[in-house]
Length: 218
Image 1 (cartoon, rainbow, N blue to C red):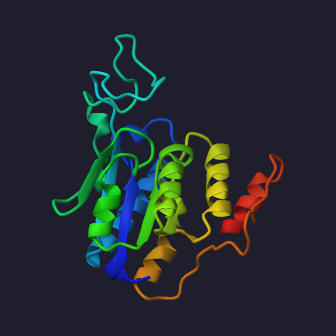
Image 2: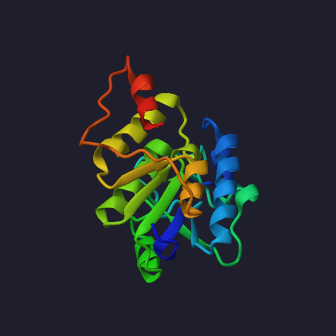
């Protein structure tokens, strides 16, 4: 992986994500390490923000609403839509707002990546079974090499988090999965460990063996 054709894409690490998602302290700490490491190498850092207009224009069908009709989640009237202070963007970073789960749906993300000559997308964020999942698949459909950082991903419950990562692992054929330490090793030209599938649908699981199968991605 060449640093010159790589970008870090962070999905929806917003203040609202502090509520109801597992392991957010770990996610933020690891994301901070990643951001610092990528900045040192002048690799582009792209943040996405999930946005729901307070006036209700453009909301997804069935979007949860407050009693007054305003959106319950990611409401533009609230500061919770901003990126977490610990990892907030700097002037040269890129922030892309989105109105649906996938970071590619009717946004400038694909155009931005192509203008930067990016072929390798290093990606992670929240929520694993929603915005992260759909963004990874859309990145794959657009022929980017996918490098997923599993310890900066989080969902509202362990089962959906594990199932989502395993579905990604089974069907994104060019996928590499790392933890934060090992992707930084790779970017520094050091020996690293990463998970790659040896065949299609390699992580077949049942409710009874989900945790055991999930550990195969370590």
